[in-house]
Image 1: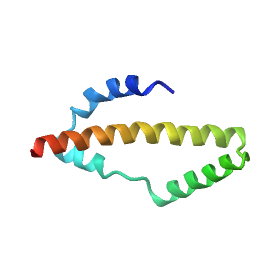
Image 2: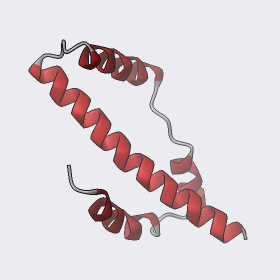
Image 3: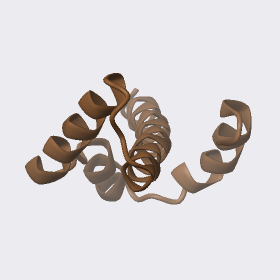
Length: 85
């Protein structure tokens, strides 16, 4: 996975493209219950060293994409806060 500064610099211009309404929607975005259960299942198996190769790839994808979404959410929350001030 690319380093945090690289991801940050790539996502900064993206975060400026959102309307206020879209930024609020992204800031509040959460995965559905089925996805959350699957992530928890994979995390538990990872902690116990029981992931298959396919499960490991899936889990890494969830983690990487989740991190990117979290960074983007933080950026739009900051922009919304600055716009409200």
